[in-house]
Image (cartoon, rainbow, N blue to C red; front, side):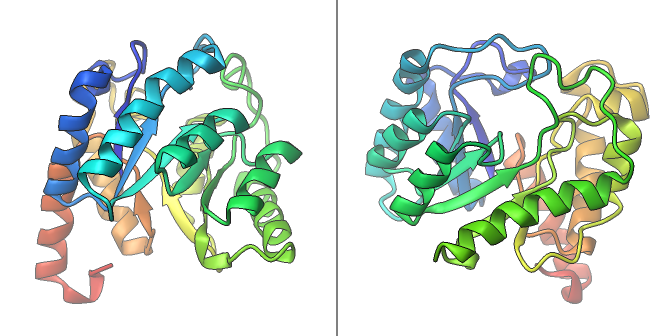
Length: 259
């Protein structure tokens, strides 16, 4: 899953695009081997300021519509926390709702059920403005996956197709380094697909001393290699070509690792 941030303030500056360059970058990600393009119009980095819903819609809908026209069979997700943004994106051609708030409210859940669309349910303790202020768990792996699975099971109980659900433990979203590493040590035994979004995150500053996001690709690729061994289904990344090269090489050397 290639990250397409139509924002001026996402934490990795090189990932920021405007609506004019977003189409070219999205098509290049598909050409490089991405399955999904994940379009977002609001940064959810720690401490990020919220964006007005109308502004978020204006940022993403035009991009999604043009991506859909350029690649009618392409897989596009909308990275948002708002039901009205998700609806506008689906109407424009998105095929999955990537909900950073984990379907916490009835409106977003009702939209997913109504549309029957694919959905990624992400775990976040708190909100972007305060989520990194002393996050606390007794057992982070059990608590995160119990929460995610409970939400997914609720959807299935309301006749949503389980194959159209994936779970994201939310690395860096209300977790400290210890929590992140514990989650990365455990893919979980969930029957649902698993998505990891670790690309260039601040955990690599704490783990490797890489202060700037542009210096965190090697650490990100290390997690990607581990994810392949763990059987993770989707990797959400900034650097599609580098990940495709890594995973193709691994699959060639050890075919049993081929996801």
